[in-house]
Image (tube, rainbow over all chains, first blue to last red; front, side, top):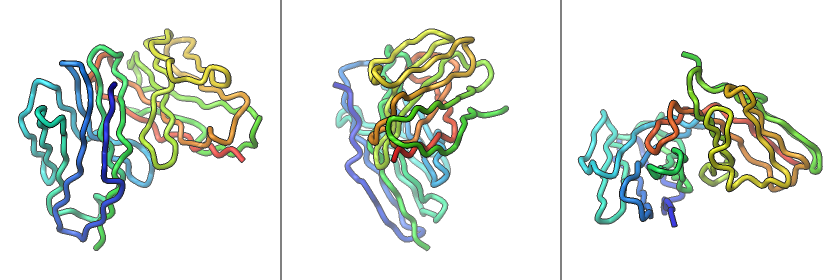
Length: 115
Length: 115
């Protein structure tokens, strides 16, 4: 079975705190991709990052960083020095290479950053 | 470059009525996806088109849902008759290719309320 689990339904932090959003996935495929999307209150899904299963290097983009560990089937997302504008629902998604590009989404984590 | 367009943005209907949603993908994108996002959940793929052919409709409730992409460009998703559990946001996405890892660009969605 292919599945994505985001165990944290809601997280609330105060501005400038660091926060990590967890993502655990299940797949038997050896080739796959992992994504993170942001869904602000406006509703449109915004692409944040894509990772393929052969690249376990961590990635940093400004205040965002991602930690991919195949050994634990996890692809966690950290926001450093959070800001109010980071408030949104964040989705982790799995895309098996040979299934037409479809995305299998987790349930999402709603992040609330308070001033 | 224009993004994925969807209309209407909001729709309220009574159960057993019919409704149709329209999507115009990014120019040149051969692959088009329709997702259903129920409140509090991640998007779930309903149907995927490659040009005007269906690639995956395994999760489309075919007794009431139908979709077409006749000229390989814009697409229409229809529900007939609607049920209360169809209340959701219907998201359209497009991508250049139909392989895993292809970045999908999402439209703003159509929020359907069935009363």
